[in-house]
Length: 255
Image (cartoon, rainbow, N blue to C red):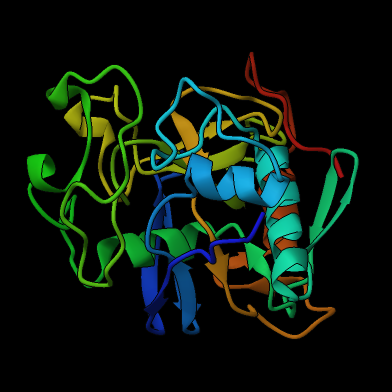
């Protein structure tokens, strides 16, 4: 089965302020230029890389969903190998490390995702909700074919709505342990969840019918570094390092 290459768009370098509502803190992330998928990964592309048939019950051009974060990083490595690029991730069971110098396909960091989503805008969305995103307002019952709504200024479609998108980062390692970040909102979400700044998280093995992912590509640093594009291993450790009596329900990440 021949591979249809993913359509990517160029995202310029820049900086973005990321806010954490729980800790009431913010930080500025400086980004080098990178590429991001023009669309969420579709069932067609996902199935081609896996050398499988598209399931009969889905639209091949709808976002692939019901895939875990671990499924997504493994698939990114498979796509990189098919494309002759260096795989980005070292996957050993549930442990995943990122070679930030590799040129293969990967998940975006949260900073990359929000910068690419906003595309120079500063409001909650890059356009009117009904024109750019599938949400609860549309009263649909599943993920919709990509590219039917208006793109942002970078040429990226469905950055908001349709499916939540896995990112590389931990959601909140002090409170939720190894949960990974989700961005963008989904087809069943109400308008307040379908905004550029909204964050959610889920277990790296979780699969839901409103969660998919989008590709990024481009080195984030030099091989051997443990930081890039708004993420760092040191910051993960610092955020998870809490002392004293834990609030009920907190399960901090343990190195």
